[in-house]
Length: 167
Image (tube, rainbow, N blue to C red; front, side, top):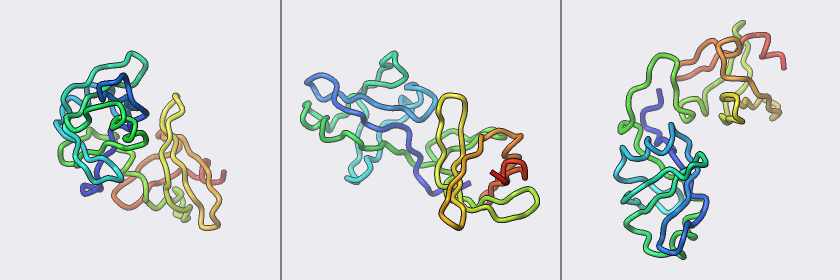
């Protein structure tokens, strides 16, 4: 898959306390997935943030402290920043697994070969991933990322079954 794209693991949602800790919304497999990384690229600023410690917030997110963030004001300034890591620092994927970034930008086609559009987003509303596809006319539709709807994908194409392609 797209080996050169960085993978987003978290986003800063705000400051936590007065000493520079930040609250994180996680996009990976929980806060433990952050522990395997010593540094993160911060979106927008191009800065590198060095992880000093991270802990579970017991609400599905995490609380982190970065060496470069020394006070609440600096932590508040990070709100909305996404934290990415180079793809090559992540563990290899098993068959059928994917990173959202691998799917975004793929051409979507039906099982009968009709062009459907382009994958523009991957969302998860709690019941599993949902793929958003933009048609040539600009309209979008969503398809559940389940084998019944998406039987396969590769580096260039995501295939949607004809039943879901007619949405």
